[in-house]
Image (cartoon, rainbow, N blue to C red):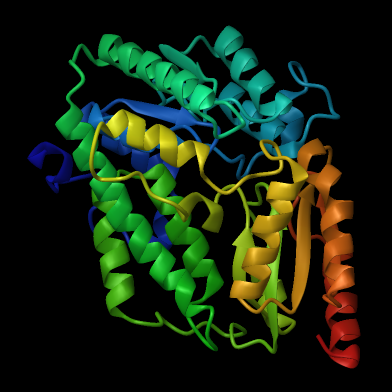
Length: 383
């Protein structure tokens, strides 16, 4: 257990946490050269980082930042969503050559296709796809337990290390501690004020690309600073939710804040949703993790609409949301499919919304103009 918590010297010691995520490929490559730790890329939030950490593996979430999606054209059609094409382009360009492999939890068809195309063309040392049920039933629990234990067996072979329940239990405890701190930071946004959303975004991603024992001191210091450092624009007059799958362009958040939007919560695959729920500390740790993953808040790719509706409205009420900006990736079928229903829910409650669609770029002149028009409209009409 102590080995899971031990703070060791790393390649990112002394790095300011606000800069760490943007530089994570370089930092992870340096850490691998220094320590020889195994690094495995993950394509979905349902790939359990606790199990990887229990084998001293660093899980590295991939989300397609900073690449021209056209680099994937030899292997992926242009009607595949930009993040999937960006991740593949980065792989083909050697940007992820420090990874030892991939772990994927079955999600949308595009991400599952990416996993297989990556495996067949880049020949990683390790590739594992976890197939999790979409329902939370006794039968689903039994099936998912088999899947998690298949992953454990595969990691035993990869690391030449036997599975130790106590190490997994300790890893679950560390991630619970980190998520509690991040949820507390989001909770401050339920009141007036609170930390800058850009900081919550960076810290959430840091927990997904760096070892949890590295991120915990950053989270502890951030929590100790109460509301965190002020950032211009975060005291905007409109309490806003952003809803999206993946979006790596912080300029969008900065522009929203500059226009008067106070982002108080997100509905995303790399943000607040990844922090909710916990594995029980008692009993078999594998069973506890399975129960946690089956009960997690639903994303568009894994949920029936009634479950999405209930979760969406719960966050709208809890964070007193006054407007919503949907940031969709072009060709993201799951999120585009449930958008009309979510938009109708908002209209029924008098909550204005805007949909913008990205094609691999971030904040373009056209998107800026649409944001300006939206905030001018709600400024005139009231949120």
